[in-house]
Image (cartoon, rainbow, N blue to C red; front, side, top):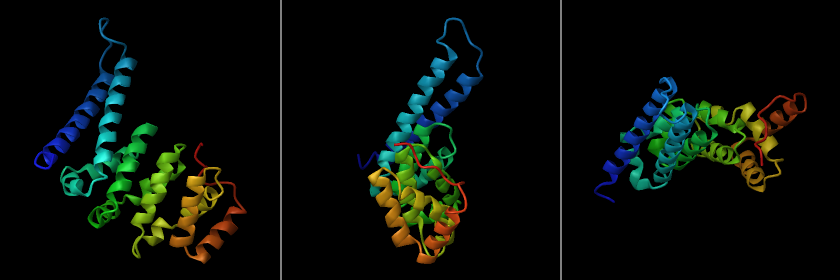
Length: 206
């Protein structure tokens, strides 16, 4: 696939954009009698978007694709999808960003694009896979310059709650975050604040 790698990824991006446009058109179009119900058409379009985004997220795992994905602005596409109402689209987009931020150039791009905030928002997802990817991505994005944002007090409070999760995967990951990316003072401050408030990022559903 080496020679046609860029062309294939370009085709996926084009397909995603076309599917997104079709979804907008399907939602706005009048309902012809002979056509499938509008809700059914929207469901098919949503499924197609999810499939294409899943493919892009999978290709984000391969370092050979990083430069092509940057050129095709797939990082921006993933960041945009974090604001979607579809849990599945958010899961795939978050997974794609998690794969991409292993690379320093991609990491710097996400930080410069103000990507930390929407990633932190994903910690409130009910989807455990999305939360796992978000926590891991925050780890990868933590630098001396970004640490203030990636380990902000609400994030540390969230990790304390996750460390008590019934999910072994999530509790272990949150514990690593607290031990390796937060100072003892940060953890103590978050623990103290948590005792006085019930407000916070909820645990994801099992």
